[in-house]
Length: 114
Image (cartoon, rainbow, N blue to C red; front, top):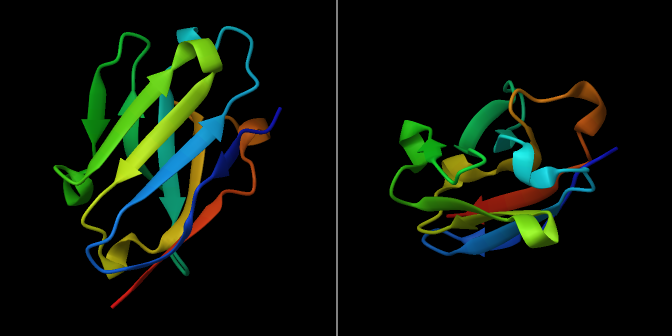
């Protein structure tokens, strides 16, 4: 199973993007889910997470700018990204929390130009 993220693109500083991830997981609603990102020459990092019940957590650098949400009926995870900065440039992935090796998809590229 691979989780396919989409919605990335090229955006100017201060712009917005909405990422989606369709997760073909049985019982999607039972999984703790997360958005991750990996910038060039850097390790993959967790950006935001959401529990089965909808509790959310964010890394400090995106707090107040990013919003993670889920639609369990559609088995879909979302990431609304606002006020984007050049440091947000990365490939974004969705996965469970913790991430499973066999669930990493190709991700979606987000590039923020200054």
